[in-house]
Length: 543
Image (cartoon, rainbow, N blue to C red; front, side):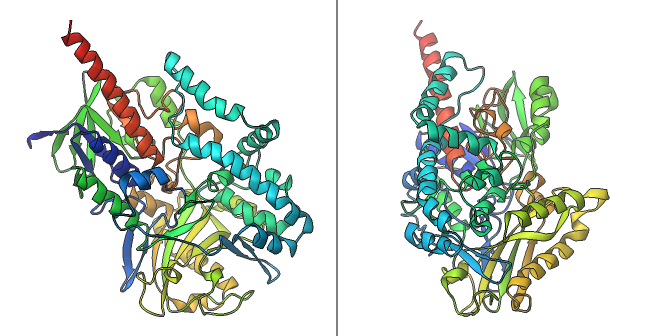
């Protein structure tokens, strides 16, 4: 057996949250090792060449939720990260060969909405004000650890402190917040707007990474989750990392190495070993062992507790709770190499324009989104899938040869597990063809312009990136799996039932998206426990 090496902390998984956690622990003086299964760190936020001369972000594909605090603390801009903003947020072709654009400032968006509804244009300032006010509170809470059932006075005080922020909201805002947490996206948007086009332009965010209908209760929160980010100090903005999403995690890796973090690649963890009821280290698939009093997992909680820990080490109530943890975001990802830009029927032209530089949402109504979900529930694959296309090469010339482009296709409502025993291995190519044909209906030159493609079905996302059920959020973003209930009630403070074993991934509060908040929050809790433990030891020695 290989000699066991000793560390202060071992991080399982070198995704962005794992790197963030490692950075903060190493900054506090701990000797940290990151074990990453793949040959490159970054998890779902990586950039790869998928066709000769064409590179793109593999899974995660756009920037907004990344914490400004994490950017600042890790000096990511100083380490080469550049984020450029989209000129507008979204462009939605509509069924009648018209279109609607979202973003570019309040007045411009109002003018756009006015083409569909004077009432909706007039309602927009109040709607944005509501999102800003609630978003500010939730943005702050995203950087804090939720109160945890069973934490006694400490947990109670934490809950009171965080709840007091909500208490200061006006009665109207509290009502809006309750609506966002409990209503469907359709019901919520119906209370603000009348135009189907306007509601579709906002409603798409409710199904991003959410295997649900816009009519599903709670889908309004997912809409909100995607609005409280910022880019370069501008709240609600979206952007692209030059060099793809891998530029973020490569800068993070540099920050970690500068703090002395050891990063192992091609180093999948086979098991977490437990001694005396406490986490004691990890064993890699190749036989190497690392002992450490602190183990922090960036994996989906279902994967961590279902694969890496002996069932006998877990309490029965916890095993029951984690078995019920829901995964599966209904996501199918593709990257395509293009000989030219899409020529949309509703807005013709292959010369680069602002509508090529934003999120191109091919989902013209809430009814379309609902039908896509119902299809996927019944048949596994939507006959008319939801497709968001981004063409980052219009903002970043490093990704494709001159005059050519790469596009990210983020596609929704593809069942994590196909019915009737069908396999994604057998159906992935047909699903990819369906997606290409769907885009081609809106831009008739698209299919002929495709030079190459990378296909990631839900099963591919799980195999390649460890995303259980292909879930890009590391678990449903539903009310029963948020805040103090993420991943399960009683274990929302990044601590599992085994002392010394922590969770630092998106399966913890505040959930999915490239934010770094779960990693930072976990590191804070680990260091709090370490300080308490050190204080107890010192008090014992002093007796």
